[in-house]
Length: 205
Image 1 (cartoon, rainbow, N blue to C red):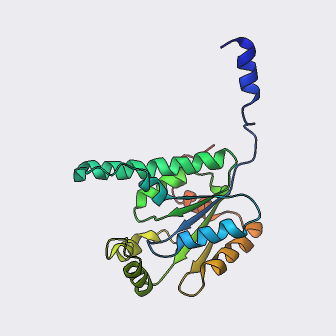
Image 2: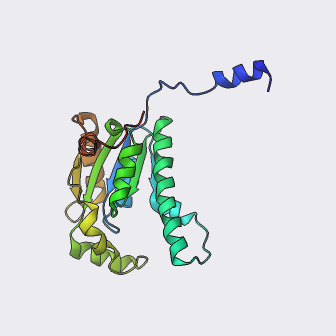
Image 3: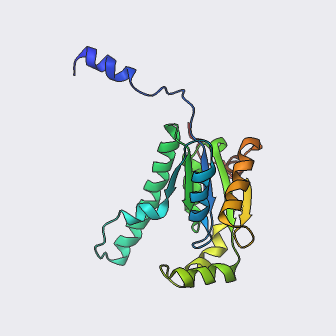
């Protein structure tokens, strides 16, 4: 590549000082209503947002049979790749709605390590046990008991910026609650407070 073309290439790169995107991080069990809220957020938010559900990343994986030990590694790497894809989108200035299940402790720590904490709006999507069981049976595309198994860990960190209960409010109402919260976000954010509890995590630049 010539010196002239190198200069032209560099000039087209995004400004490193450009603003980062906002990450609306929806966390809840399977069948709690996260995807429905995300769809409503994309409909009502004033700025462009991308919905990046982890299910979409799992759906891109090959369907070939794998031994259990290999599948465990592949699933772990899929989650790690998903987190880094979200972080990359936000770092490039894109607003993102994340549809997540923090049913393993390491997943939250990985996100705390990767995401700029003041850019994250951490949303707890809650739903009572009986209701997620009913929804799980109705949808029929999840292993029976999956949501209940996730309940013990998914909200264990105990800190959110905003919460909604999808047994009491429909997806539109939950999305509007989040939208109304966005302009009035207090500092420190939930992610900032969680990072303070985990001082060994290196702050993302």
